[in-house]
Length: 265
Image (cartoon, rainbow, N blue to C red; front, side, top):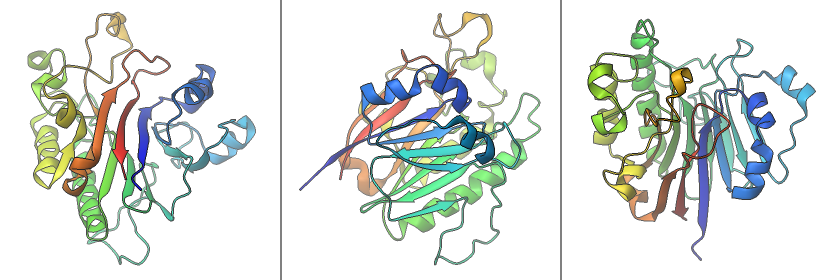
C-alpha cells in the first residue's frame, strides 16, 4: 500500500540557536517524517551537554572536525536500513578518489525504496577562494549519487549554495560572478539536472518565485531580497512520486527557510 512521506530540509545555521528559536516545537507542529539539517555547528561533545529533546525522532549526527563549523544531521521517525557518513558506501568499493568528509557535509540514509542524501555544499566564499574545492566536491558528489542510483533511486536535499537561474534570486544582474551565482557553479547545477536529477520545486511550482535564504544585512528578508539555494533533487524514477514541493518562507529561526517535499513510496 502506498505511503506518503513528508521530508524536510533546513539549514539551521547553528542547532543551538535553532533550538532556542523553537525547533522542537516546530517539529511537533509540522510533524515531518524526516528532517535533514545542515550547518549544525556543533560537535559530539558539545551536543552531549545540550541534551536536545526531539521526541519521536531517531537522530543521526555528522559534525565537522572543526568545532562550531559546518556539519549535518538527520532526524527521522523511520529507522533506516543503513547509514553512511561522507561519500563511501559499504560494499560499493572505492571511488576514483575517496572524499574525506572532514567538514561533515554528507549523510546518506538508506530506506526501503530510495536513498536519502543530505548535503551541505561548500560556499565558494566572497573572494571565490573555495570555488575550485566546490567544483571538486560537486564532481565527487555527482559520481556518488550516480553510483547509488544503480541500486535504487535517490532523494538528494540540502543547501546547495547556488542559485541555478536568474529566477532563483532577487538581483541576478548585480550578483553575476558572485559566490553562489558564478558561471562555474551554475554550470554544475545544470549538470546535476542533465544527469537525470529533477528539481522538485520547479517540477511542482513552475516559474513561481520564492526564496530560501536571505542575508542578515539591511533587513533584506523583510523586503524579500533573497536567493533560492536550498533544493530537493530526485532521480527520474521518482518524478511521478512527488506530490508536493514547497518552501516555508514565513518560518523564522535561521537565515534559511525550511523546504520540503511530500513523496509517495
